[in-house]
Length: 231
Image (tube, one colour):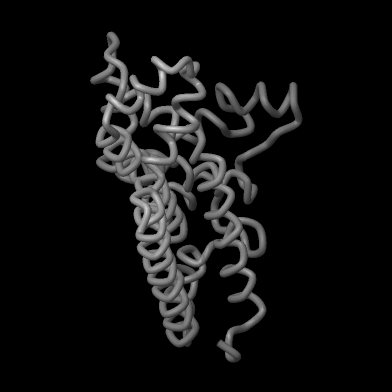
C-alpha cells in the first residue's frame, strides 16, 4: 500500500466516495421500490419490475449513453437542472455517483424485496389492529424484520458501484481527480507503457475492498438476525 502513488490514492478515495454516495442516496428509494413491488399489486407492475432490472441486461455503455442524453448538460432533464437549479452531472464526480447508483440499483432492490416478502404479514396486521398507522407498522415491524436484506442489498450495491466502469466512463468520461475511479484508472494504466504494475496494485485494492464489504455484510446480517430472534 505504501507504494501507491498520489494518483492511485486519488482514484481509490474517489471510488469510495462515489460508491458511498451512490449507495446512501439509492437505499431509501430502493426500500420504497422494494416495498411497492413486494406489497402492492398495480397496473404496470411487470413493466416497473423490468425497468428496474434493465441495467443488468443492457450493455453498460448503452445505459451510460442514455444517461448522457437524459442528464447531460443539454439533455432532457440535465438542461433543466443546470439552468434552473445549477446542478450539473455530466463530467462531474456527482455524475459518476449517479451512474453507479443506476447500475447498482437492481442489486440493491432484489435482496430488500425478498426480505420484505419474507416478513409475516400477520405481524403487520397485528400491529395494525393495535392502532398503529401504516407508516408506523412499516417503521417498527417491517423495516426491522427486513434489516438483513437491507444490509445485504446495500453492500451488494456498494460493491457493484466500486467496480462500475462502462456506464460511468460513457457518462462522465475518465478525468483524473474528478471522475477517474479505480476501474477507469486500471483501464488507463493498461493502455500506458509500464503501467501493468500500478494496474495490478489497483486490482488488489479493488479485490480487498470488495471482500471487506462482503465480510462486513455477512457479520452485520448475522448480528441483525440474532438480535431479531433474541439470541
